[in-house]
Amino acid sequence: MSKKIETSAITAGRPAVTPDAPLNPSIDLTSTFHSGGPIGYGRYGNQTWTSLEDAISELEGGQTLTFSSGMAAISAVFSILPVGAPIVASNQGYSGVMSLLNSFHTSGRLEVRFVDVVNTQEVIDAMKGAALVWLESPTNPCLDVADLPALISAAKKLGIGVAVDNTFATPLVQNPLAMGADIVMHSVTKFLSGHSDVLMGSLSISDPALFKRLHDSRSFNGSIPGPFEAWLALRGLRTFPLRFNKSQANAKELVKRLTSHPKISRVRYPGFGAIVSFEVDGTAEQTQKVCESSTMIAHATSLGGVESLWERRRRWPIESPTVPEQLIRLSVGCEHVDDIWDDITRALNAI
Figure 1 (cartoon, helix red, strand yellow):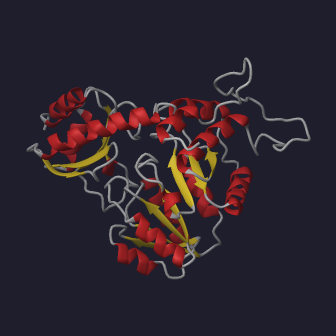
Figure 2: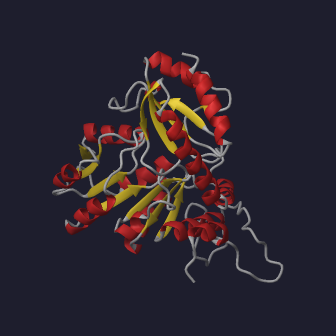
Figure 3: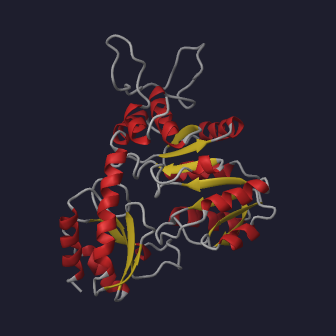
């Protein structure tokens, strides 16, 4: 029976129903297994990981692998590409990925063709001879939206692999595997776990042979998650749709209010999701002061938790220089929207 995603988030990854069976999976704290089974050793598998992976698989489709962090998951994808392989990627996106790709390009590990993902034809033109297209949509932190159906279709016609970072949109908004993508990546740290207490990543994969290659990469590079973290992430996943929908509703209301505020010069919001980026009409120093003046919104780097948090992204030296100095990325939480707004206006009044 096909289930809605709100149901799958609650029901997937549960133990088999037998008399007196637990409702929730246990935390499998072991590194060593008796011989004769399919796991063999703790670096190759863990039942707590499997429960979480089964749940994410129901949300995204395909087979899922979990990793010790989002960057570990991303690194696994790049690790299976041959040296010098050409890839197409956004010229603006998550700073960790941008730093990694720039280092790969400089060293010759990969040939990275940086493109404007909003310009569909530019992306397609860059695909010729590429091994992989890495898409992030919406991008972090400027929230640019790529035409995923068109780009995925173009790449598949050319026989090129496609990986999509779905962290911001989540499977509640878009399902890249259903569009034809080969890999969907999540920073499970963010919306899926949702409580700012877990570092974890995931890859959902459409092809069994590709799944095996990535499973081997995880096993032999040692980028495995901890069972306790997997258990926490699965517990957080149970409320993912509730949290995301509440945060998204708050974000849409805040966009209306931010757009008319005299100290805001631009609001960036794709029309969905719980991330809002906006630019302060002032200097970088004034923008930094706004972030430091909040009393309820946490001044921190991350996103996707139940609590609202924000930061001036260019405070990080590794952030893309195309990101405006006055841009604040706001991860909208589940608090009452009026309380979030009151804190924003107080902070803006500090400049």
